[in-house]
Amino acid sequence: MGRHPPEGIAAAVPRLVEIVARDQVGADVADGKLGDVLKDAEPAHEGARRAAQLSTQTAFTGVTSGFAQIKALEQALTSAQVSYDSTKVGLDVGVRTNLDVLNQQQQVYQTRFNLAQAYYNFVISGLRLKQAVGTLSDVDLEQVNRKLTG
Image (tube, rainbow, N blue to C red):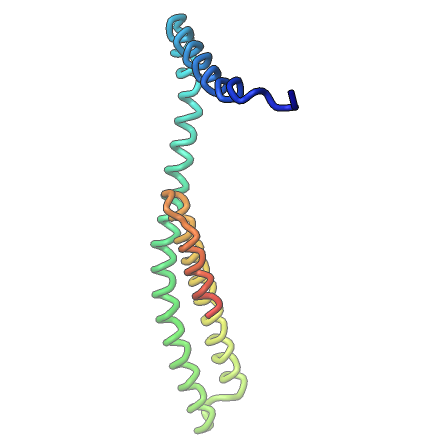
């Protein structure tokens, strides 16, 4: 005989564990203990439910506010670019200085940076929302990765 039990015993052990567990649950029900166990587990269940609801609401808010922020920053970028272009024209005709042009150029780049940050936050919020509702998959992550690299 080796280190492993004979096949018949090895096959019977999981069934035996199932019977013992079922008998123990039956005994707990008969003794009224199962109700106590369920009662003790209820606060933990409620806490988990609330945490799941909060994370879902937070992620949804992140997605909706992120979308609004992207739209606002896209408009701000358009405005900053128009302002930069008009400041360059003002420099050419002599009513603006190089400093004015550089300040407007800085505003354009800052707005581009803010827009890129808003896109990033939007994508992360979308992934967090999918995670919170249990639909996040490898395909989602691969899709984001493709868009970031390609």
